[in-house]
Image (cartoon, rainbow, N blue to C red; front, side):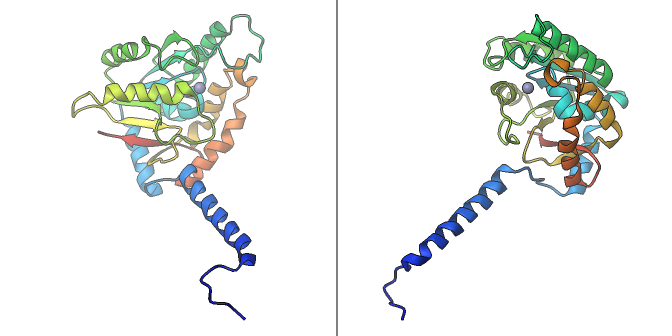
Length: 257
Ligand SMILES: [Zn+2]
Protein backbone atom coordinates (compact mmCIF):
# COMPACT_ATOMS: atom_id res chain seq x y z
CA UNK A 1 0.00 0.00 0.00
CA UNK A 2 1.34 3.44 -0.88
CA UNK A 3 1.31 6.01 1.86
CA UNK A 4 0.48 9.49 0.60
CA UNK A 5 3.11 11.30 2.65
CA UNK A 6 4.43 13.46 -0.24
CA UNK A 7 7.93 12.01 0.25
CA UNK A 8 9.85 9.78 -2.14
CA UNK A 9 10.13 6.27 -0.74
CA UNK A 10 13.69 5.68 0.46
CA UNK A 11 14.28 2.71 -1.82
CA UNK A 12 13.84 4.95 -4.89
CA UNK A 13 16.42 7.51 -3.87
CA UNK A 14 19.42 5.70 -5.41
CA UNK A 15 17.57 5.67 -8.71
CA UNK A 16 16.97 9.41 -8.49
CA UNK A 17 20.64 9.99 -7.74
CA UNK A 18 21.61 7.94 -10.77
CA UNK A 19 19.17 9.91 -12.91
CA UNK A 20 20.56 13.22 -11.61
CA UNK A 21 24.14 12.09 -12.32
CA UNK A 22 23.16 10.98 -15.82
CA UNK A 23 21.55 14.36 -16.50
CA UNK A 24 24.61 16.14 -15.13
CA UNK A 25 26.85 14.01 -17.33
CA UNK A 26 24.77 14.80 -20.39
CA UNK A 27 24.83 18.52 -19.59
CA UNK A 28 28.62 18.49 -19.09
CA UNK A 29 29.10 16.62 -22.34
CA UNK A 30 26.98 19.19 -24.16
CA UNK A 31 28.96 22.08 -22.65
CA UNK A 32 32.46 20.68 -23.02
CA UNK A 33 32.43 18.77 -26.30
CA UNK A 34 33.05 20.40 -29.64
CA UNK A 35 29.86 21.21 -31.50
CA UNK A 36 29.32 23.14 -34.70
CA UNK A 37 27.11 26.16 -34.13
CA UNK A 38 26.12 26.38 -37.78
CA UNK A 39 25.22 23.84 -40.46
CA UNK A 40 28.10 21.87 -42.04
CA UNK A 41 27.42 23.57 -45.39
CA UNK A 42 27.50 27.05 -43.85
CA UNK A 43 30.69 26.19 -41.93
CA UNK A 44 32.41 25.00 -45.11
CA UNK A 45 31.28 28.16 -46.92
CA UNK A 46 32.78 30.27 -44.12
CA UNK A 47 35.99 28.23 -44.47
CA UNK A 48 36.04 28.88 -48.21
CA UNK A 49 35.62 32.59 -47.49
CA UNK A 50 38.62 32.41 -45.15
CA UNK A 51 40.73 30.95 -47.97
CA UNK A 52 40.08 34.07 -50.08
CA UNK A 53 42.07 36.29 -47.66
CA UNK A 54 45.21 37.80 -49.16
CA UNK A 55 47.30 38.55 -46.04
CA UNK A 56 46.93 36.69 -42.78
CA UNK A 57 48.63 36.88 -39.40
CA UNK A 58 48.68 33.88 -37.05
CA UNK A 59 49.71 34.33 -33.41
CA UNK A 60 50.69 31.31 -31.31
CA UNK A 61 52.67 30.52 -28.18
CA UNK A 62 54.98 27.65 -29.19
CA UNK A 63 56.82 26.03 -32.04
CA UNK A 64 54.41 23.31 -33.32
CA UNK A 65 51.18 25.17 -32.36
CA UNK A 66 50.76 26.43 -35.93
CA UNK A 67 51.34 23.06 -37.55
CA UNK A 68 49.16 21.13 -35.11
CA UNK A 69 46.14 23.42 -35.01
CA UNK A 70 46.01 25.31 -38.32
CA UNK A 71 48.82 23.96 -40.50
CA UNK A 72 46.44 22.71 -43.18
CA UNK A 73 44.64 26.03 -43.48
CA UNK A 74 47.90 27.99 -43.61
CA UNK A 75 49.22 25.62 -46.27
CA UNK A 76 46.06 26.06 -48.34
CA UNK A 77 46.32 29.85 -48.00
CA UNK A 78 49.96 29.75 -49.11
CA UNK A 79 49.08 27.51 -52.07
CA UNK A 80 46.48 30.10 -53.07
CA UNK A 81 49.11 32.83 -53.10
CA UNK A 82 48.32 34.43 -49.73
CA UNK A 83 50.92 36.23 -47.66
CA UNK A 84 51.12 34.07 -44.52
CA UNK A 85 52.83 35.82 -41.61
CA UNK A 86 53.18 34.12 -38.25
CA UNK A 87 54.22 35.13 -34.73
CA UNK A 88 55.59 32.47 -32.37
CA UNK A 89 55.79 34.03 -28.90
CA UNK A 90 58.21 31.59 -27.25
CA UNK A 91 60.84 29.04 -28.21
CA UNK A 92 59.01 26.40 -26.17
CA UNK A 93 61.91 25.82 -23.82
CA UNK A 94 59.68 24.36 -21.09
CA UNK A 95 58.41 21.56 -23.32
CA UNK A 96 59.77 18.04 -23.75
CA UNK A 97 63.31 17.51 -25.03
CA UNK A 98 63.13 14.18 -26.81
CA UNK A 99 66.36 14.79 -28.71
CA UNK A 100 68.23 15.79 -25.53
CA UNK A 101 69.24 19.01 -27.26
CA UNK A 102 71.74 21.05 -25.20
CA UNK A 103 70.07 24.26 -26.46
CA UNK A 104 66.40 23.41 -26.71
CA UNK A 105 65.27 26.95 -27.60
CA UNK A 106 67.61 27.05 -30.61
CA UNK A 107 66.53 23.56 -31.67
CA UNK A 108 62.86 24.47 -31.43
CA UNK A 109 63.38 27.59 -33.48
CA UNK A 110 65.19 25.63 -36.21
CA UNK A 111 62.40 23.03 -36.22
CA UNK A 112 59.82 25.82 -36.58
CA UNK A 113 61.76 27.22 -39.54
CA UNK A 114 61.80 23.79 -41.23
CA UNK A 115 58.05 23.37 -40.68
CA UNK A 116 57.40 26.88 -41.98
CA UNK A 117 59.38 26.18 -45.15
CA UNK A 118 57.18 23.15 -45.85
CA UNK A 119 53.95 25.02 -45.17
CA UNK A 120 54.94 28.13 -47.10
CA UNK A 121 54.94 30.82 -44.41
CA UNK A 122 56.20 34.15 -45.73
CA UNK A 123 57.87 35.08 -42.45
CA UNK A 124 58.14 33.73 -38.91
CA UNK A 125 58.49 36.34 -36.17
CA UNK A 126 60.00 34.57 -33.15
CA UNK A 127 59.56 36.76 -30.06
CA UNK A 128 61.67 34.52 -27.76
CA UNK A 129 59.58 35.42 -24.72
CA UNK A 130 59.65 33.08 -21.70
CA UNK A 131 57.63 29.88 -22.04
CA UNK A 132 54.78 29.86 -19.47
CA UNK A 133 54.93 33.62 -19.08
CA UNK A 134 54.83 35.03 -22.59
CA UNK A 135 51.25 36.24 -22.65
CA UNK A 136 51.67 38.22 -19.43
CA UNK A 137 55.10 39.52 -20.39
CA UNK A 138 54.97 43.32 -20.83
CA UNK A 139 56.80 42.97 -24.15
CA UNK A 140 54.22 40.66 -25.72
CA UNK A 141 51.33 42.92 -26.66
CA UNK A 142 53.39 45.95 -27.79
CA UNK A 143 55.38 43.66 -30.08
CA UNK A 144 52.22 42.04 -31.46
CA UNK A 145 50.69 45.48 -32.06
CA UNK A 146 53.82 46.65 -33.87
CA UNK A 147 53.84 43.58 -36.11
CA UNK A 148 50.09 43.85 -36.72
CA UNK A 149 50.54 47.40 -38.06
CA UNK A 150 53.50 46.26 -40.15
CA UNK A 151 51.70 43.25 -41.68
CA UNK A 152 48.23 44.85 -42.02
CA UNK A 153 46.42 41.49 -42.11
CA UNK A 154 43.03 40.82 -43.70
CA UNK A 155 42.45 38.09 -41.10
CA UNK A 156 44.08 37.03 -37.82
CA UNK A 157 44.33 33.59 -36.18
CA UNK A 158 44.55 33.14 -32.41
CA UNK A 159 43.53 30.44 -29.91
CA UNK A 160 39.94 30.52 -28.65
CA UNK A 161 40.25 31.95 -25.12
CA UNK A 162 36.54 31.65 -24.29
CA UNK A 163 35.47 28.21 -25.53
CA UNK A 164 38.73 26.24 -25.85
CA UNK A 165 38.36 22.63 -26.88
CA UNK A 166 39.51 20.33 -24.09
CA UNK A 167 41.46 18.82 -22.53
CA UNK A 168 44.74 20.56 -23.38
CA UNK A 169 44.94 24.10 -22.01
CA UNK A 170 48.07 26.23 -21.67
CA UNK A 171 48.42 29.62 -20.01
CA UNK A 172 50.18 31.05 -23.08
CA UNK A 173 47.65 29.62 -25.55
CA UNK A 174 44.49 31.21 -24.17
CA UNK A 175 46.50 34.07 -22.63
CA UNK A 176 48.06 35.22 -25.90
CA UNK A 177 44.61 35.28 -27.49
CA UNK A 178 43.12 37.28 -24.62
CA UNK A 179 45.88 39.85 -24.94
CA UNK A 180 45.48 40.14 -28.70
CA UNK A 181 41.70 40.52 -28.44
CA UNK A 182 42.11 43.41 -25.99
CA UNK A 183 43.98 45.22 -28.76
CA UNK A 184 41.63 44.03 -31.53
CA UNK A 185 38.64 45.40 -29.62
CA UNK A 186 40.17 48.88 -29.77
CA UNK A 187 40.34 48.79 -33.58
CA UNK A 188 37.69 50.51 -35.65
CA UNK A 189 34.71 49.12 -37.52
CA UNK A 190 36.88 47.92 -40.42
CA UNK A 191 38.94 45.62 -38.20
CA UNK A 192 39.76 42.24 -39.74
CA UNK A 193 37.93 39.06 -38.76
CA UNK A 194 39.59 36.85 -36.16
CA UNK A 195 39.57 33.08 -36.65
CA UNK A 196 39.73 31.37 -33.27
CA UNK A 197 41.14 27.85 -33.28
CA UNK A 198 41.25 25.05 -30.69
CA UNK A 199 37.61 25.96 -30.24
CA UNK A 200 34.66 23.86 -29.09
CA UNK A 201 32.10 26.21 -30.68
CA UNK A 202 33.22 26.34 -34.33
CA UNK A 203 31.20 27.92 -37.12
CA UNK A 204 33.78 27.63 -39.91
CA UNK A 205 35.59 24.62 -41.33
CA UNK A 206 38.43 24.45 -43.84
CA UNK A 207 38.71 21.25 -45.86
CA UNK A 208 42.34 20.18 -45.48
CA UNK A 209 41.95 16.71 -47.03
CA UNK A 210 44.20 17.63 -49.97
CA UNK A 211 47.02 18.88 -47.75
CA UNK A 212 46.81 16.47 -44.82
CA UNK A 213 50.05 14.71 -45.81
CA UNK A 214 51.84 18.06 -46.00
CA UNK A 215 50.41 18.97 -42.59
CA UNK A 216 51.76 15.71 -41.15
CA UNK A 217 55.18 16.34 -42.72
CA UNK A 218 55.35 19.92 -41.37
CA UNK A 219 54.34 18.79 -37.88
CA UNK A 220 56.93 16.00 -38.00
CA UNK A 221 59.70 18.64 -38.20
CA UNK A 222 59.24 19.27 -34.48
CA UNK A 223 61.38 16.26 -33.65
CA UNK A 224 62.33 17.43 -30.15
CA UNK A 225 58.63 17.45 -29.22
CA UNK A 226 57.12 14.57 -31.16
CA UNK A 227 60.04 12.35 -32.09
CA UNK A 228 59.63 13.13 -35.78
CA UNK A 229 56.09 11.87 -36.33
CA UNK A 230 52.98 13.93 -36.94
CA UNK A 231 50.77 10.90 -37.53
CA UNK A 232 48.90 11.06 -34.21
CA UNK A 233 47.25 14.26 -35.40
CA UNK A 234 45.34 12.57 -38.26
CA UNK A 235 42.57 11.04 -36.16
CA UNK A 236 41.75 14.31 -34.45
CA UNK A 237 41.36 16.22 -37.72
CA UNK A 238 39.51 13.33 -39.33
CA UNK A 239 36.93 13.74 -36.54
CA UNK A 240 36.71 17.45 -37.28
CA UNK A 241 36.32 16.61 -40.96
CA UNK A 242 33.47 14.23 -40.22
CA UNK A 243 31.55 17.03 -38.49
CA UNK A 244 31.49 19.02 -41.74
CA UNK A 245 31.31 16.06 -44.14
CA UNK A 246 34.86 16.00 -45.52
CA UNK A 247 37.89 13.77 -44.96
CA UNK A 248 39.93 16.16 -42.79
CA UNK A 249 39.14 19.67 -41.56
CA UNK A 250 40.34 22.44 -39.27
CA UNK A 251 37.59 24.25 -37.39
CA UNK A 252 37.30 27.90 -36.34
CA UNK A 253 35.01 30.26 -34.47
CA UNK A 254 34.83 33.53 -36.37
CA UNK A 255 34.79 36.91 -34.62
CA UNK A 256 33.85 39.87 -36.79
CA UNK A 257 33.18 42.66 -34.28
ZN1 LIG B 1 51.56 25.21 -27.46
